[in-house]
Length: 297
Image: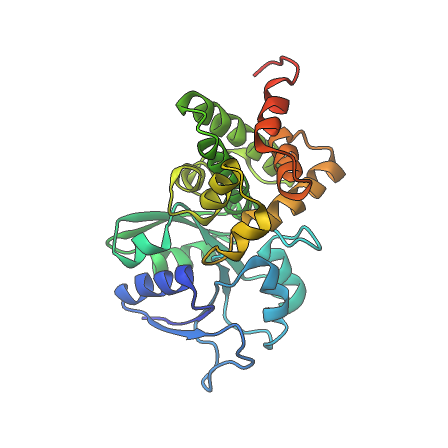
């Protein structure tokens, strides 16, 4: 049994905590507003489950723990374009950091639906240790040492889930959706490779697996935002009425800036940025994508 502290008791953090308790671990939660570790310290492992844009502020509330840190967060920091593991290394000066990602709707994890994720750390021993903590009868965990790729997969799929929602909001049909998701996956792989990750990681659970889930599922917040945009609603109104955080919205902006700065070919991201931040009509964004010059696959 391990003593685990989870910072953030939202839907995903709570569901993950339940899965760990079913594995026999002792789990306790800290709210985002808490400013100190429990009296007996952070335990054997710290799990981060707060909105991505709040990570740096939250980390600065606590002294660096001696325990390893794993992130459930799927996003890119807007101001720095850093992944969560990079923020943890910078703020807490820690190298024993990792991530858990994959297709995992919080409500289904809470309900005990069979779920499969990937645990990633640059260190193989650390990945093995966390895999043993996470792996259970209905919550299966694979492992990877491509931490950057796994984190990027989780962050990028939120962006392209917005595109999937827009596609369905425009009622464009299955042909369009299948083509969009295929090209989204290719774009994700290009971005991952540019960031030094293994492109093959994007075709695994944290990339393709999570993309399929969030782009198609009406339970996905990013899908809901995209679908509402496709039906003609304005982004500020959508976000005001959304229960929870759609990480893909700020990630689109961060990713657009990253792609431009590193000259990464990311036309879907470019059009999403125009739709979300420049009020380009979604149907016009689709036409722009379709009218691009013919290329090799």
